[in-house]
Amino acid sequence: MLRWVRFVFVAAVAASLSFGFWRLGYSVGTPYPIRLFNDHRRLFVETAAHVEDGTLPERGDNQGYQVPQALWEMGIRYIRRDEGCVAFVFATGPICPTDRILFSPHGHRGLPRYDLTCLFASAYIDENWHFIQTE
Image 1: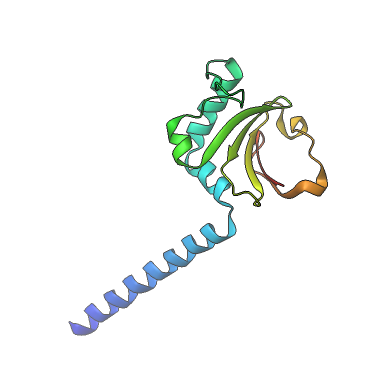
Image 2: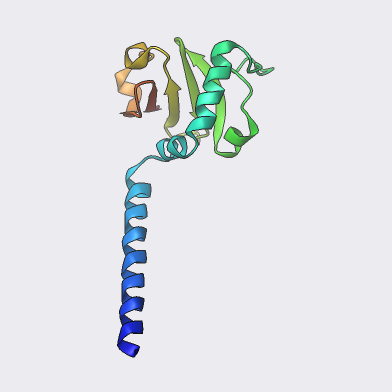
């Protein structure tokens, strides 16, 4: 009986460690904005649709659109139009690069043009969504 309990315990520990290492790899290798987008895709899609159809109110300081509370709590500070795309801009420090999730209704060919000297990172999320990190 003791042998059986020991086997179950070792199997449980091995399974939990392997799951933990898998999650660690996911969290270390994937930038935070992409993880956030993948976890809350529906909220991003709905907000981009509201910007596209004009139902999301504009901010009073002419800095884009009002950020829904749920997105604000996740670290998004601005929602703006950028050359026909909807840009979700994350909070950054004064010398840190700026993370953005972009929605382009025309796919990757409709993405805004950025100066390549200011572009730190870029990744396609899917056909209409893109992640960039700029200066």
